[in-house]
Length: 185
Image (cartoon, rainbow, N blue to C red):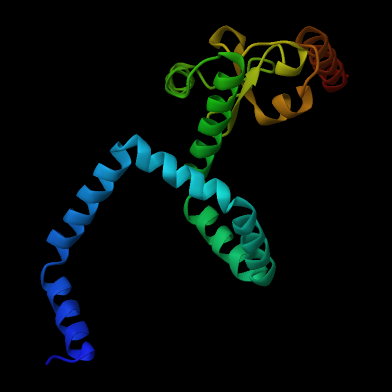
């Protein structure tokens, strides 16, 4: 009779020799399960039933591992700055599209690639770091559609915030003329 330790070693050796085939079977089984609506419904019910316990566990884990998790997060952000920026833009665009029936992420990305990277408000070159601004802010009833979007430099977009665009542009141009007058004097 074979001992449990022998069986364990034999099974482990078999899985290592047949690793790719074993993984492929597991992938196929998972794909079949995910295609079954009843299976997905059961998974969702289990997730919902455990939601509070999971939330408590996550909160406790984060509390015990703050420094380690912060170090992991900072390392990932440093190594994936462009990816993080793309994820953030994509998330914001999807959220606005859902809420407002606005432009989809793929359309927004193509639009941004096609636009010259010159600030709409101050005409500064902002190729390296540009923002996509809502000319009429969402908070003032503006829509997340291409006709309401402008390329702007970070300082202008952050200063404008949710201000009325025409009043804000008047202030910016008045400041520019004052500075030009000081420079000429």
